[in-house]
Amino acid sequence: MRSLKVRRSLAAALSLLLSFTLAGCQPQERGKTDVTVIGSEAPAIADPAAGPLTEAQAIVLSNVAQGLVRFDASGQIVPGLAERWNVTDDGLSYIFRLEAAKWPDGNKITAEQVARILRRQIAAKSENSLKDTLGAVDEIKAMTDRVIEISLRAPRPNLLSLLAQPQFAVVYERQGSGPFTIAPDGKPPKLTLLRQVSDLDEEVTREDEVILGSAPAAAAVRAFLDDKTELVLGGTYSDLPYAHTDGMPRNALRFDPAAGLFGLVPTRADGPLADVELRRLLTQSIDRQALIDALAVPGLLPRATVLEPGLDGVSPMPPAWMVTPIDQRRPQLASRAAQMFGDVDRPVIRVELPDGPGAKILLERLVADWGVIGIKVQRVAIGEAADLKLLDMVAPSTTAAWFVRQFRCGTAPICNSDIDELLDGARNATVAAQRFGLLDQAAQQIDEEQLFIPIAAPIRWSLVSQRVQGFATNRYARHSLTGLGDRLDRNRGE
Image (cartoon, rainbow, N blue to C red; front, side):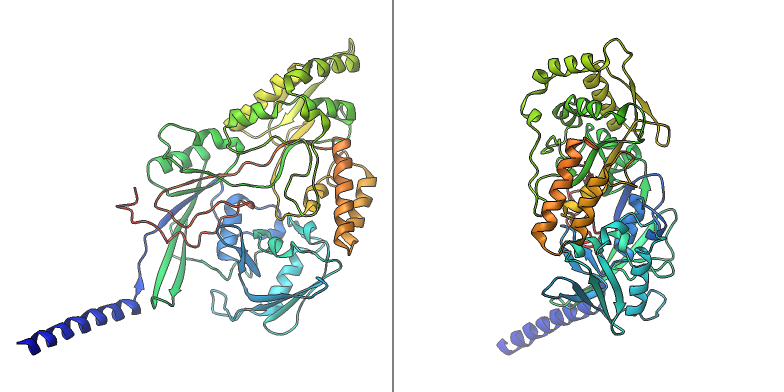
């Protein structure tokens, strides 16, 4: 009898082991993740050399046409097309070894193809929005069939974070190398993205599937509340009030700790904003904290300098007037305005702003704050004649160079050639301390001449279902769709 029980136990164990083995040989199905990007354009592959990317295009490129490297969910650099890389001791050469990979059509990916694509992105005729950030690149060449070298004129420690941006995604004949592929049987205007993931420890293969679509902000928020989408990406200050709505699940609204520029810049060299004293008067009259409170962004701090804390090698100091509370500043500001204009009619400042409830809040704050000094404000639509426009941009790296180079001559209507000389010197500097010093001087001069009216850091937000476990916020506001398959079951996620 005992022998029979032993045989039965062995048989049961073998049966269980066999079932695990068979399961390990089969792909494990995962739930689909429905992702909605805020915007009016459907997600699609785009050519970064053709001009600025929409948010939907950037998300598609990041996930189906990775660069040499890419960002993971938390904004860390991970391998993309390159399986590994080395940097020479002098920081002037980055050598990337490509993984053995193929395009979706089955053709082998070669180093020469990738080098040619990257050279095109920074060529003189390219309209790539980040082309200027690679100004220190001297040469991009294929050393072997799987090795690429990027040579620099001066060290650039932030090169990898730039190459991970979707503007440097590697697109070949409207194809990318992953990590996702676009399923041919998707249902336009949505894309179905697929990714096979092997788990060597468990000897199983799983399939991540993402249904990627787009919608205006109000519709995207409603779809999230109705449980028709599980992740909403691409939110900005302009549409943030839609997310502050009754019924929003706790912890669903997530803010990226984004770095960058959020403020006003003159749109033309003439007109009232040509007067530096008026620009100084306007920036000192803004109640930044009141705007932050109205938008309800936790942790966001007022800013009055072009640079922000946390950048490499620089430590911006807020201007002295920031120490004085706004209600104590206003009488003196009103007096200065009276001295500037006397009995002359004060100018009406036209500000270019997008549609959206957040833009309306910003406009209301400007009307109130500048009204105290007798300045009237008029909103104009995007593309119409204006005196000021809003810059709302996330920095692609932690270097101060990106911030200050937005205000060089040829880019900003009101500029100073002395600042350009500082920027040229910083670009060619081979010693880090010298480069940082020149960038800091340029930033101080931008602040002194008030070429930019800073307000805060850019606002980027997402809506995340509790079922989605692979999402993380990061300073670049770039969100990989990998890992979203690591999720709670739909029936028990809440």
